[in-house]
Image 1 (cartoon, rainbow, N blue to C red):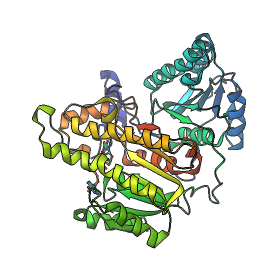
Image 2: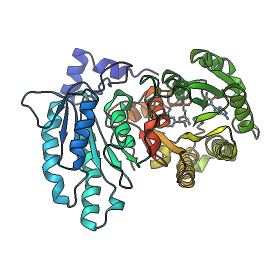
Image 3: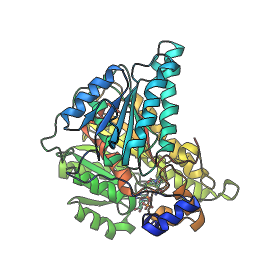
Image 4: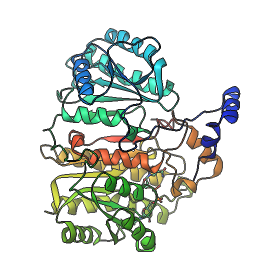
Amino acid sequence: MADTYLGLVNTPLPGKLAKTLGLPRPAVLRRYTPGGPLVPGPVLILGSGPGADTLAEALLGWDQDVRRHLRPGEKLGAVVVALDAVSRPEDLGAPLLELGQAVRALLPGGRVVSLARPAEEAGDPATAAARQGVDGAVRSVAKELRAGATANGIVLRDGAAADSPGALGALRFLLSGRSAYVDGQFLRVSAVPAPEEPADAGAPLAGRTAVVTGAARGIGAKIAEVLHRDGAKVVVVDVPAAGEQLAAVANRVGGTALQADITAADAAARILAHVKERHGTLDIFVHNAGITRDKLLANMDPARWNAVIAVNISSQLRINDELLASPVFSPEGRIISLASTSGIAGNRGQSNYAASKAAVIGMVRATAASFDGSSRTINAVAPGFIETDMTAKMPVLTREAARRLSSLQQGGQPVDVAETIAFLASGPAGGINGQVIRVCGQNLVGA
Ligand code: NAD
């Protein structure tokens, strides 16, 4: 469903009117285009932590224009603020006040990225306070930025260095157009061995095989396309009733289609047999299939409740059990599960759906803990309002409100979710495990 208001407000007259009336003015977001620049202008590095020098060097290595001081009149593509050495709340003032001046020079679609360490790993209360303070400041900056600019952070876990492959991979993702609808979020990265460099930087998933469930349309179809664009071989799965659409997606991505209801007892066995026969190994599994059956809890019936739990979480648990026990699933395999901001904040009329999506988060965290010491990862991606058939079913006014109630004042596109999933499937995301990455434009629904 097209966001007509977004189109209108980005034309001269209606745009001026919206400004005069104080109406929301969502911007057209800066999204990834292969071969395009990483950021739309120079990158300013602020902060005095050791991370500042390290990241400046890395950015120079990526052929970016790096600045260590704001130049009068110059516009910026991004500001990176290194706060990895803060040890007292008073340490936050200087770099963040400087950031306040720098964001005035940010170009449309610009980026703010902070670098910090986890509060829970601090040895003393003052350091923990300073580190947690970064969280509040960056989330606030995200709410203040306009013109499609975003603010996110990288958190270096377990002593990971600023130039660890995971930190640099996260920095690249957050600076790029791939993270267009990720706003007010923190990527927590651990140190892991450097991944093998892909032979072709434009095809970071070359040689990998991915399965995407619920891929006949919407977000799932787009995930299949983006994984294919990034070089993966893709197997798309959906119910037999969606067979025709599924075949069309498979053709588009040069992959294969498997008609299967993921709630069936033999779904995992059939998927694994299909992959084994055609590709030998399975590297990436995306649990995308999901349904809604909305009703206020007071009006909820067992059929609605049970259907949502069966598709959205029970099937994932059963498939994961078989996946993890199977030699077909790679020792470096990646699992990515679709959660939802409803599963984080709750949503009126969605107690069944929110229970299922919160359950996904619980499952992801517990499974991630069991991966400790292995090279596998599992993460959840929690979309907010994304423009698909699922959200097109919403009543008009609720839909319009949901679109505008985010810092970016618009719904996301399926490609925004797909880009985050492709990043989590890629080599540099090997240090990200057990996380919930929201792709929600900093949805204001709470929590
Ligand atoms: P959609 O309804 O457009 O597509 C879902 C797909 O899953 C359909 O092709 C459907 O046939 C398939 N499916 C349903 N039950 C299945 C089953 N038992 N076996 C196999 N396939 C099955 O949904 P969407 O908007 O693209 O959402 C994709 C995922 O993202 C879902 O998990 C959804 O909960 C989640 N999500 C979506 C939004 C949003 O705003 N659209 C927000 C948060 C989370």
